Image (cartoon, rainbow, N blue to C red):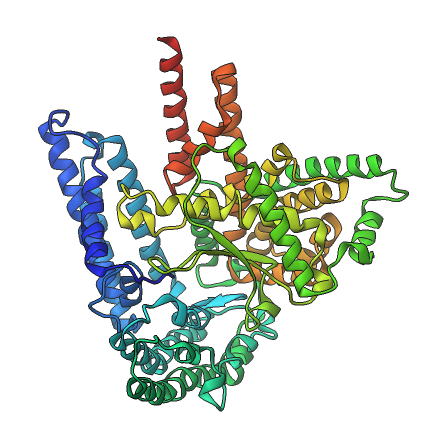
Length: 601
């Protein structure tokens, strides 16, 4: 979710013109059939995007459309059904396009738009909307970002903000109705992953509205407002926070604790859901972007675990450690030297690592983004159930940077030996570099610029951890072992995610497998396990994407020989924005051929 403070007229013009800019063929180069195909695709791209903004006024705000800044999206069953019928009709139109006559760029646009529409259709058919949350996220957690993701500069902005707060209880009612429908057919989260989950809701149930994070914008009203305007907005704001946000969270807390959690399913695998095996296969293909099966992924994971375990043993030999891998991991988990004593110490260490990597970026990239980033702790209301760190992009058009969030909760579960790998993944050259450059890709249609394809994005993040070797960031064997334990973690995901959702593994089996093969803290192993249980197949995307990027790099280096330029290769990976792995492979192979042609002249 993002926000805007840039002139909205400019944003509207950009969003309207971007789809046109994606067509790269000149009129002279187009055949009549190609021209008709391109124009038909552009029409459907614009039609889908306009409909999406109409259906989701929050998204519209984030991309600069201001006509419904006081509204929230409806998730009533009738509205969901209507959107499903729209998507079905749109898919028929997309299928009718003559893809063979389209330009290369437009074939890519067609593939990516079909992917989005197909996933929405599948989600409705499987009833995915009946589970609008997972172990560390949900619609109520997204709503808590509202104060930083909407414009708050004029009186009208604040009145729109208050209107959205007042609409939150009705939105909660719609979500509850969907979740109750899911309960009636067994489409729920597993009960075990919701232990302690109420903290993500309870934090927002306050007696004094001034204690709510939704009141924070009223503590720093624009200095241009008169005292009368400030007083009036404070009065309206208190009512909106109490009767809107707090009332909605109070209602949701009651539903979760008294009705939903007690009646959630006791099974954990996606295969136990209605049409569960088909649902999991669909999730596998969506998150990997490849026609892979759980069986093939499981076997790949076992091979990667064995390979990485061998590299871990080499580090033990280098350190002349007296003991096996299990003993070494126990040493890492318990020795105080590997843990920060205060949250500030952990944040400072993460910041130092990030700045060291900043200095190395020009050796690995020719193009760097203009957007800066900061380092901050994970918010308190999320931290207990949250992962070790995450990249949070800025609200579009705001004056904010991107942020690398570091989890300072339970410091004894945040080892320093994995901090370098975490920082390279979430900040630079990982997600911040990727996102910052994507913001500057103005030639892409907005449906692509506001997409996130996990196999591409998380594959790049894991590849970025490995790049730290070339950048010289792993200065001692312990940090390099931390890198390997992160890579092992992602390899283990191939084994345990498929184990959970296709082969009947228990929660305890997953935690034992992670504890035996990685140096993750036991707290993080528990939170990660619950994440895999509640978010089927997402965890597969990291290792699958990283392996593809490494494969393409090896192919390019072998083919181009001394003409291979690593910086140009990286720039080409990031130039195209979020794409599927088959599209990425096609792009890189075209790039290799172009380099060959240049050198043969």
